[in-house]
Each structure stands twice: as structure tokens, then as C-alpha cells.
Amino acid sequence: MRTLTGSDKTMSATTNAMRPPAEPIPDLRDPEFYLDGIPHGIFTRLRRENPVFWNPEPDDPKHDGFWGLTKYDDVVAVSKNPKLFSSDSDWGGHRIFDEDQRRLGGDGDGASDIKSMISMDPPEHSKYRATVLPGLMSKRVLAMEDGIRRRARAILDEFEVALEEETTPDFVARVAVELPIQMLAELFQVPDERRQDLFRWSNAIVAEDDPDMRASDEYMAQCWAELTQYGLELYQERAAKPGDDLISMMVHARIDGEPMSLERYLAAFGLLIVAGNETTRNSISGGLLALSEHPEQRRLLLERPERIAGAATEIVRWVTPVIHMRRTATADTEIRGRTIRRGEKVVLWYCSANRDEDAFERPFEFDVLRKPKPMQLGFGIGQHFCLGARLAELQLRVVVEELLPRFPDLQPSTEVRRLRSNFIAGIKEMRVRRS
Ligand code: HEM
Image 1 (cartoon, protein in one colour):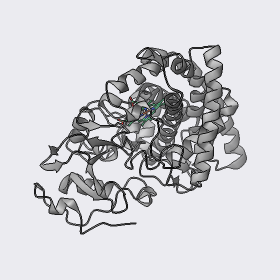
Image 2 (spheres, rainbow, N blue to C red; image 1 turned 120 degrees about the vertical axis):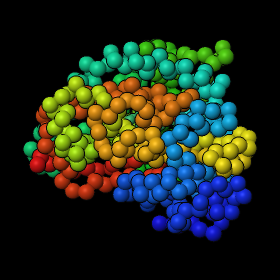
Image 3 (spheres, helix red, strand yellow; image 1 turned 90 degrees about the vertical axis):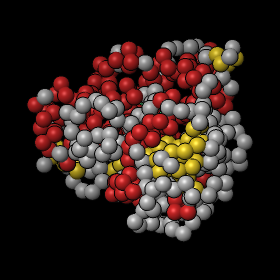
């Protein structure tokens, strides 16, 4: 694990209104840090001692570091000001690294029109967001509940067989992976058999630091080529025969009167594949883990299943499946006395904001009866608020409703294996047994 000292800007900045931290800040990009879960001890110390911290990046060709925001109010304020804090890939995009450094195709050669709504600012962003919005709106999502329940029951039927045959099956592979990926296949109206491909491509795109998911740049390029080919096949198919699925919505959308370019369509297809399954998968497995570590909360939900909807929101706060997003300052500005210069990166640490003692009462308690305000930030806030939030919460609610009464005593049988990533709080494997 790398620890950075010396050139730490927070210690030398003339505008520094805060005490320097008692101990050096570790490099929070380091994916090794997240192998045992979110390093909450470090984030708690940062919120207290250095809430707007400077994380040097001596190895980055373009930036000498980034600002990290750890407080709830700061994450909200920045997320709600896209003019001053851009998500646009022309400024670098939504990941800590600039998107032209590790672009989707994996060749890092810079210029590309592979840009999706998550890496756009208004007014362009709103036009692209509008293309798929009808497919993910609350009313439409609620109508999917029966289908989600049928799928959840079938998945749990198979899981029950595995539990008898294998004793300690992997809950992630058997349950948490299955429901979101099947729902994604339904949203795209593609055959269920293609779901393994969607799963593989999504892992390779998002988990660049985990060799189990992205074995090499060549493998990533191969996944992107496969995704492109399949995306284009679907494009042709839906151009000729439209349905009411997300692909048809994009193919037939008009942006300022023109069809979406193929590059933009493929970028949106890739975004939906990743966004629609990684996050929900990890909230399902993280949710089971949280409930088994807090048996009194699990009992409470067994007695009062009507509280499971609220519990789904608390699970997303507790797990915070997306650890951070990034913005770039478009002009000089200040946050808590720190001067942020135009072009500097600002990272929104949702995992920290969701444990902020100034925003939440007892933030380190997993409380399925927690009040909905303040709103947890696991889905972001503002312009880019998660388009799939309603669908994700619904899947989470239904799976917990179906799981708890059937398997009230399910427990991890060994330590979970986590994703090596500073971006997605993921569980790769969780073997479980009845206690
Ligand atoms: C528990 C599950 C989920 C979590 C924690 C989550 C988290 C997030 C977060 C934090 C953002 C904000 C990005 C930003 O501010 O820069 C986001 C955006 C987005 N999410 Fe989700 N997400 C989840 C599920 C889903 C699902 C199921 C879908 C689609 C089927 C989806 C589609 C999207 C899209 C398209 C965006 C980009 C919105 C925009 O840029 O306007 N997400 N998500």
C-alpha cells in the first residue's frame, strides 16, 4: 500500500485553513486498500482533520493530484453545480483517471467520441439522458415488480437446490449476479442466454484493477470489440423492428433532430451494461452480509416485512456500491478554505459522505428503520442522479422479501472475497450456509 508524504499540497497550500493531518494520508487510489472493505477509519479521520484533502498522483501524466471531498454537504454542493464542477470527458470525465488515458477500447490513444451521458454536462447531458428516461421511470419500473418477483423466486429455487447439494454455494454467483443481469437482458429485450456476455463485458469495463475481471488490456479490447459487434447487431435489428426496450429508445431517439451517432449509442449501451448490474449485484450481496452481521435487524424485518422498502435504502447507504465519482473544476473556486484551481480534479467520496456524523445520526449503525432524510448519497445527487435508482431499490426490496422468510439464517461460511477496486465496492465471492 502506498503512502504519500512530502509533496502533499494540503500541507503547503497558503490557503490552508485546516490543521494538517496527524498522520500522512495514504494514496486513496490504491485498490489494495479496498480489499477488506471501505477503509472507514481513514475516511473518518479525514472528515475530522482534513475534509478537503489533496491526494498527490506522482505517476499521473497530466495532473499532480486530486482533491478529495469527504463531507456530505460538500459532495451535495459540488454534485449540484455542474457548471463549475464538470463531468464532461473533455475535462477528464467521471473517473479519477482522465477518460482518454484508459478509454473503453483500452488503447489509451486519446481522441474518441465514445462518450456517454455520465461524462457529459448540461445542456448536452439532458438530451442524452432523456433518450432512455422513459424506460426507467418509476411508473414503468413499478410495473416490473411481478416479473422481478417471478425471477427472484426461480433464482432462489435453484439456490436452494445448490444449498442442499453443495452445502456452501456462492451466493454472489447464484443469486446476486443473476437477478440484475436477467433484468438488464429484459430491459434490452435480449435473450437470457446473452447475459453471461453482458456480465463479462461489464466486469472488464469497470474493474480495471482486478486481474480476475480484466486479465489484460488485450482482454479488455476483445470484450469491447464483442460488445461493439453485439451492440451494432442490436442496432440494426431494432432500427428495422422497434420495440419498447432501451435499445429501441436509443436507436430511434433524435438529438437536436439528428439520430445519435453510432459511437454515442455504443457508449450508452456500455454505460447501461455496467451501471445496470455491477452496482445492484453488490448491493444484494452487501445487503445479505449486513443483515447476517446484524441479526437483530434481520429479525426486525422478518417480523415487519413492510419495512423492507426502507431497509433497501439503508442497505445502499451502508454498502455504497459506487465508492466515488469525479468532477473537474472549470474555474478557480474554494471549498472549506481550500483553493481549487481550474482544471483540478475533485473526487466525491460517497462512501465517506454516507458515514458523515454531521449529516446522519449514528452513521456507523446499520438501522433498517432509519428515516429517509437526509437522503443517502449512494445513488449520487443532482444532474446525474442514478437513472436506475428505482429499479435497483425494487430489485433489492423484492430479493430481500423473498430471501428472508425462506432462508432466515443464511450466513457467510468464510471470509468474503472482495473486488480489487477503488471505484466499485464489490464482493466477488461469498460462500454461504444455513447456521
Ligand atoms: C444499487 C444500485 C445502484 C447504485 C448504487 C448506482 C449508483 C449510481 C451513481 C452514484 C450514479 C451517479 C453518477 C454521478 O453523479 O456522476 C449513477 C448514475 C447512473 N446510473 Fe446508477 N446505480 C445503481 C443502479 C443502476 C441501475 C439498475 C441502472 C440502470 C438499469 C443504473 C443506471 C445509471 C445511469 C444510466 C447513470 C448515469 C446518469 C446520468 O449521468 O445522468 N444505475 N448510478
